[in-house]
Length: 174
Image 1 (cartoon, helix red, strand yellow):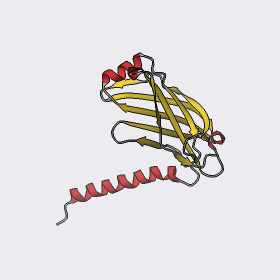
Image 2 (cartoon, helix red, strand yellow):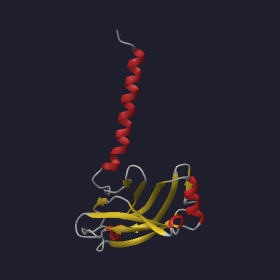
Image 3 (tube, helix red, strand yellow):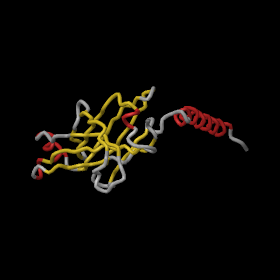
Image 4 (cartoon, one colour):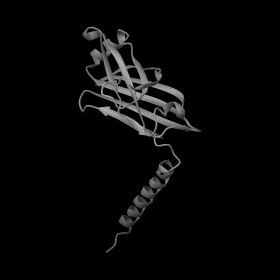
């Protein structure tokens, strides 16, 4: 026997899935830049994650935002924020060298208002920059590899600068 209620639920689920695909499909079209709405995240699985998000605004222009999360006690994170921390972020184009001496500086990002924050599980820092021309992101011939380097001064451990890179955002931006 067929249960009409189960059949109706199956049809609703099918239509919902098709609607989701239809909404997402324009984002995946060939004329949409490769980076539109994508993240490039780096994490070690236990102590931090660092993500770059590029948002395509149209006509070859982008906005960028980043997040750095460091697992640590709330008290330690509050102490970092209280001492100033000297939180910085910069956008780079990666070149194929082991020591990053050939990486191309693109621009600095600014702290997002209201950040950094000490949370129940650590330190959260966010940065952003607006109106980046695609030509600025076209850092070399061929495929481009973009990343953000975020740093802060750890005044709790003798003023050591901590540095974290996002993963590479790979695409053709120019």
